[in-house]
Image (cartoon, rainbow, N blue to C red):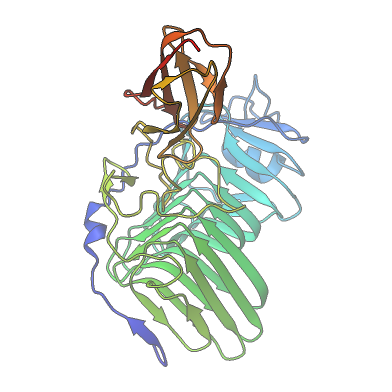
Length: 418
């Protein structure tokens, strides 16, 4: 790249852990918006444009021809094989494409030049897979302000995910072709901002790029606000360049990447600053699930843009913090509990005050006295009108994932007569 500053690290071994077959879990489906519900199914059962619950239409009809302002296109479970370009039309606004049923994940299998174009303003796609098979073309293309959430997009074309402005959260973009770009933001004019949170952006093909951002022509101002994301490419993890008269800024925080190519007129955050990390993430399974010992676990940040669930529908964050990448490792580790204030082992006081804490911030507590049952409690815990004699207090922490400390903290003491 002419006039560029390059951080080279060669082929990153982390790419060897990536498999294009992704096993995905359920995503919760929120309530409908104020527009109409457009029902589609893999098999067109309406023979027209009804798109009703009892007579769902085909996916191209539902998205391209029927969906209008504030409508929700509900995809029945199954695989939608199509060679037609699916496009939320430019005249519409606030169209959402999502699964019809909770616990399902429809798959669009496309050979079109563009698998799914989000041309209408504020279009949202979430909770689906896009498998795109068309060399030198695009999976999901957000032309206007667009929102891609809890999505897996895999493409052997130029890019699985392309945006001009909008948000990408809890999403996997996987480019498998040579010179593929997992996320591409290329703008020919005007000021645009793309916000990326908890994405896994990986290009496994030779000379591939994780994030590719360019300002083309004169007067383009491109800004990428990236946090808590895994970015990796066989060529470069991040590549940015701007034509004369344009600027590109790729700001990365609490993210995992190593190599970058920075052309004239462009800036890219250093991988050794802003809480970023260069150690290779560790993946397990058939998707891009994180291993418990991956450096990306609990290393992300939480802000107003952070999603509530990961790409698989697991709650986010879990454990000690938000994970980097689209997958949030389920928390299976129980918290520990410690009593920090307690009565003397022998006392004449018929009241007692306990204070306690857990190693996990935000954990709740259950307390019990003597042989009574565990009940919800908080620190400090005051006990009054206790009988003389021996007593035993126990407290256990319960984290947000429901893990319970199996070894409660305990204290025994004796109240003597005055």
